[in-house]
Image (cartoon, rainbow, N blue to C red):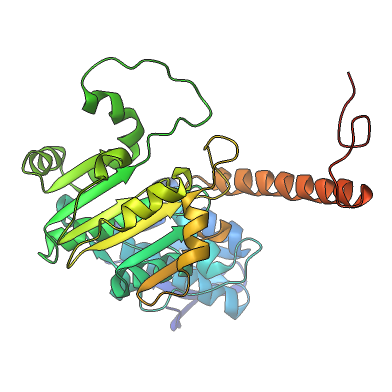
Length: 360
């Protein structure tokens, strides 16, 4: 919040006070090591900013100074929850509030209401984009939710957080995390060990999300007590799941029949969240993705929600968004070339020796 009453001269300019810290520890947590977060804000918003005597002041257009105050306030609120923030989180806050990047600036409304409380040291998970907020709302308001989007948009992570929160609050009894055991274009060969040891490599991302929200010992205890199950999709056949939060991850790699089998496991007082990235289908050529099939068949059924996250919701390393963009441009260009080739052959695939096929 900008406080005009605290304006002070600095090198011939009138600096506006935008935030004041209670102590040095709070200032260091918010501004970062060696004021690294402050430098990020200064560069992103093109402001002159100084930190002096526990006060951050800025000089520049009023709109950008106001945004700098909002960014610092959001960083402060996350520090209160997590104890610290990382650089990629500050960059995301700047993108959302400050408009740093191609997307227009937007301020997340009612952020407090969207916080997800989990077990780990009373930590809370906070949505970092409007798309993620809509995703959380959909899970709260619907019994079945389909969420699609590129890597790094929080599809699985937020679903696991909502599941952990539901069990923590006593709303549901079990968490069941499911993945199809499909190799991502690789031949892994024979895997030694018990059945659980064979499928664990496929399920590792789900364990990683759980361990980020619960103490390791608590995760193991819940698995032993059957409160948490992490299972391959093939093990779901024939079951009815009551009072459970069920998550099907990597659903683009299910077949249509597997998707039908999964969805019909839903029992009373249960929720199901289905996540996937339709640009990363690893099924054998010719198999229809169950996720795409479900989007076509189930979209108009009341009680089922569909959420599509996009590049603006990516919250991993800042380079992930650039990588996704590069691949999307390549896919779009490939489709454009393919359509031109088809049009040039009257809608028929090119004959041998025509454009589109390389002769030996």
